[in-house]
Image (tube, rainbow, N blue to C red; front, side):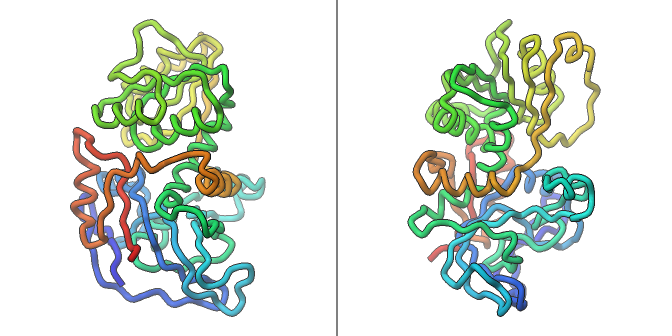
Length: 331
């Protein structure tokens, strides 16, 4: 089968590898669509997270079950599924409390074990989440990043009277706009970013204000930082009201110094948001299937696995001209 394999910084290759075998307690899934995540770009550019080289990348996907092991219950061939891609230790305090997204050893498929940028993947049934037959498979490929957003919106305690600011205009930011407006009914959403194309898209999916900067001297009760740079973090602090909430979803590639006195003096609540819980994945599948959100505008392009180098290069351009890229394995 074809698979996208990581060999080092900015070195991804499509190779023919053996199709995985389905064990008695496992499920073989034919991948339909798989999305390139921002964390995949961190691997691509900085070799972050990855434990084995070469490795089959990817953790966002939707697929169709091809085979179930003899011991598998609750699933059958032709069922549509996404997966919880988290790989946890099962022993730390976070795991014991039922919060695997805070696992001390948290990893993901595509980082610590083979991922979904392949024609087939084998997983344990416990990781699988059913997708309704009537659901649009292409949209459901974005259920995993939408789950990140649902966790974020919950932790930010979004409500209709909110006027929020989002710093960054990448896919997670765009999904946050969609969820804030379509699910939570937020009054107004301000977005700042660097990409003209993504800012235009932010306006199309519901943002009330888009620009490269937030309005001078305007502060917000809730600010969401999704850009992951020193300048954007400081901008987020600057635009958070006293006694307001600053939510950070970013992965920061570089270290920097933070003046915590600014947060202390203004009594800013700092909330970190990491991945999701299983229920967020289930909710993401459901709201997409029910048509409560439309994530189609985010899908900029589809590539064959053989075009993996071109796909990563497109996402890695300094002037972002794409939002979400999917690998398509559908007929």
